[in-house]
Length: 354
Image (cartoon, rainbow, N blue to C red; front, side, top):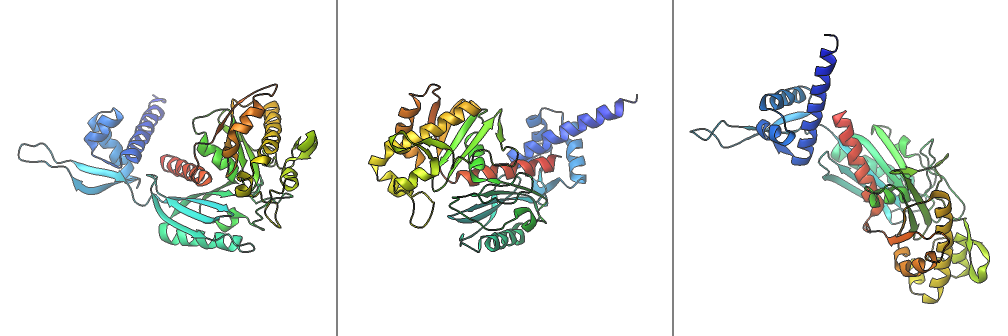
């Protein structure tokens, strides 16, 4: 008899989780519809709704099904309680700072933005976080993307030589101290998550104003000891005339940097076909190093100018000793925001179910 109570509690827990998941995807259901959706009896569905209502996770919407006068019993519609809170998704990028609050259904219920003005990035980040908190409290989890490397231990942003976007001193977890869980990672890793939710082993090469790479192995983004896996800017590759050159320095040699900056001038690069073979050769050298060390099933090319050179890059990688499939990214609209939004929603739902 000692095992009866734990077994019964487990059954109830599993049933309650199934009911919550059904409401997350269907938004509102009667007890009879829940029974049909989950595959349980109506009394079991009714008991689960009662338990979840007592815990404040489910609420009666006040809506009723048509009924009476020979049309059957009137049914009550239930939905997730409106007090379950929201998840905060934030992107800090040269284009600006964008923050969204997402509810448990995946709907964006509030949005705020500020320009990413040098010297004011930290202040602007705090402003958008406060604006969202006032509009969509309570925030239970926050997920942040930054266009700078992120220290794996502290969550603080890291400055590396030649980084085109310098945020300044910023500790996102400290700014969001009232937001519950806070998860911080760099923009390339989030773009890879958005691109490869169903992919297990691939490398995501970001080729834009800056240079980056995300390694996904066994379905997990690999971040390394300090969180700096994939920082490829200073990787040695093949430059003009077959010389070894740091990847980032190639663009300076070719006159493809923005004036007074290490940022790569994507529009100029795309409009300079004569430079494409040299750039593709250098990218091919980077891919060869990634293949040797990470053995990805495929390489995905993202960023503002990388996909435009996909044919040239494939021509180079096709001649490599270990060729690998190379394709352009499919998530092209705000890939980092797509990644953080998806992670924020997953974590919020996990908190509700947990």
